[in-house]
Length: 145
Ligand code: DQA
Image (cartoon, rainbow, N blue to C red; front, side):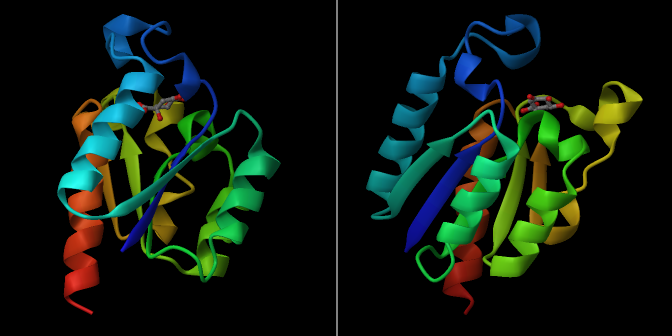
């Protein structure tokens, strides 16, 4: 099983950006943690991060026919991007939406997710462990096929 982990804008600044909200773990150590988790489960994993909406759309399109599941934290584009929603719908690859913080308890604008409608599950507020939970959900979905 092959999983693609996509991170949107500013997630490359993890560990530096607002640590009181997003914690002190760096983007690099997040990738290492996910890689280790996937290795133990014999899963192939690929990572992509971009600060640009169109690049995220391009990467989702490129995943068509090439990956079995997508874990996506679209960052701020969660709350604005119909284009990312449409890309996820277009490829119809099972996707899980992840947010490190509890977006549903933050500012009103963060409580809206355009992406959610194209995802089989959403995990918020579990810190970076949410990415691992998302992988488990995709594995369960893969097994039940
Ligand atoms: C985030 C929440 C978003 O509102 C924010 O713009 C982010 C990170 C999270 O992981 O909690 O960049 O997606």
